[in-house]
Image: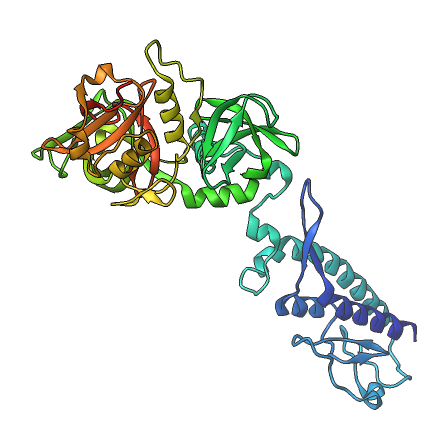
Length: 451
């Protein structure tokens, strides 16, 4: 009885535990991870350690076959089933075996048990290899030979690659760390202090961007362009909403990198020069085609050499509202006219339009501004250039008109607002905007205010 119980118990335990073998992946710094998986080959090897044993129920122990289902055997067959060991055969409860055979069999069982433990170690070491062709794979097979935190934090990039990754991450927010977008219909006032009666130091046009430096729940301290001040948080998008809005608003710009860039009518060096654009000026990009970049020059499409511009995606910024100090001889009406013109900054460009709110073209914008001050002008940049007194561009005062052309004739007009800047209805994408007076070569200046 003793010998039979030992053999049955040993065989039952081995076959019961075989499907539950766990191969744990060694993780030096993380939690132990493993997979539960035993192949048919492993099961066959384990069964060979204790002899050839039929799959079935051995005194209440259920053994699963390779298909994962219980062997379907009747309980009445248990006593009729033979269990074969190394030269041992039991039948029923009465068995006669000579003492020498029993001693040898027990030693064989002991040796098999020892050999089984040795092979268990080998099976653990080789499990990853046996699983290669199976359906399951250990985490270590997937991630590599080492997946501890020390490996995860290991530096694998060069300094140049890290620098490129930094630039890419920075540009993901168009150069802003904490992006803010003006969520207004016209302009968002920027004040010197966080108060409704604070001095006005600038305006953030509709959909223009800023860097949010700090906020207290009511006011935000921002920086945009050359302006630093405070705006109401009620009218400022931040966080995810700001980034989503910026993705819709960002425009591709070409910044001039040479002293005087030739703007041509066609994409070749034989084409006529429409105008010259100074270093640092930006032109909105329509498309890039090899060595040439198609850009918008107000409401015209022209071409510049890709060699002399830097193309990037940008957002609009604030406009300075520092007190207008134009020098002696500047009347109050000129100052007031320029301030009035700025109120419509960011409003739409509409060809043939004269509405300061719903849309106007360049000459329509000018005539509507001057109409308020009792000056009647025709709806044409060419006709406006013939109205009033011609002056030198260098003599222009706030409220004078600056005209631009394409090399043959005048096709655009803007209002000079002082400090080397003009305000004008540029094109359908940018609407009413402020530019440097030399953003393209001016061809004429006219004075229509005689104060």
